[in-house]
Length: 113
Length: 111
Image (cartoon, rainbow over the protein chains, first blue to last red):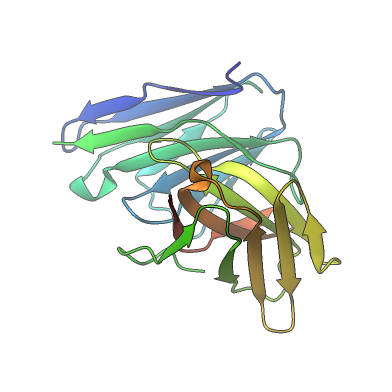
């Protein structure tokens, strides 16, 4: 049974056209993360929510925003996608912050045309 | 802790042999370390973790070693199988903040 679900799996958007990626979880975990992973590179943390508290990584561009309306859902909004934002976007959850295992979703591959 | 590198280092091992994948981490204050396995087209999958107050932890067919003196982490896979072929990432964090992945190593298991 899927525990971290990402929709859609593949998303195509136009340069500059806002796009939203979604993530949901059935684990009731407190923490939700968004990562960006480019081809042949490691995942790079963009931000995370600990409950309702938003934690942005220092080098995450302002073009990336996130919303967490409830425990189960978290959204990644890219306000004006550029060609360099084409990547796999991974959502992950963990029960708490600190030394706890992260559970990853399958990712959404974003193409920018 | 930068995620740079377009060419993943590759480790090729014969099926049945043991594999050792190494990782140098960046933050001496990191207190929690994880190894992930990522197959093509999938999200990373947790393999094993270790806290900074330990230097060795064993799981099923896997062992993680932590050397804080030289900021080095290794993953040992016993009796490597074709299903172990994947990209392996180490990750470090300090109290759940600044989750940083290493550059990754591609493990190729030869029949």
